[in-house]
Length: 136
Image 1 (tube, helix red, strand yellow):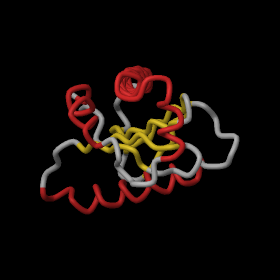
Image 2 (cartoon, rainbow, N blue to C red; image 1 turned 45 degrees about the vertical axis):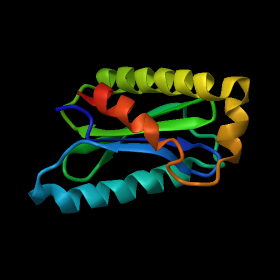
Image 3 (tube, helix red, strand yellow; image 1 turned 180 degrees about the vertical axis):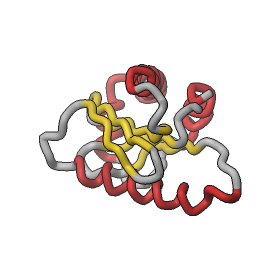
Image 4 (cartoon, rainbow, N blue to C red; image 1 turned 90 degrees about the vertical axis):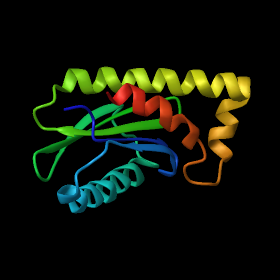
C-alpha cells in the first residue's frame, strides 16, 4: 500500500506548507484524523531542536511515520508497518527534489526567503497534485 499521508512543513515552526492524503474508506475516518493530529505534533516537535535528519517513528494501528529534513523543510509520510523503510525514504527524497525544483522554478534563488517568511498554512497546496502522482 502506498503512503497514506504526506506533509511538507517548515522546520523552524512546523508550519504545514503542503499536505496530501490518500483516499480512505469511511470506516478509517477516525484513524485518519488521529494520524493527522500525530503528524502535526511530530512536525511541531521537530522545530527548534537539533532533530535527526531522517527517522522512522512507529505509531498506533500498525502504521509508521517516516520523515526527512532537507533545506529548511521536513517531509513526513505515514505508511503501513509492512511498507519497506527504504521505499519510504526514496519516496521522501523524490518529493523533496520535486518540491525544491518547483520552488526554484517559481521563486528562483529567493525560494528560501519565501519558505522562511510564508505565514499562511498550506501556502503551496498547488504542489498537492505532484504529491498525489508520486503517492501511487
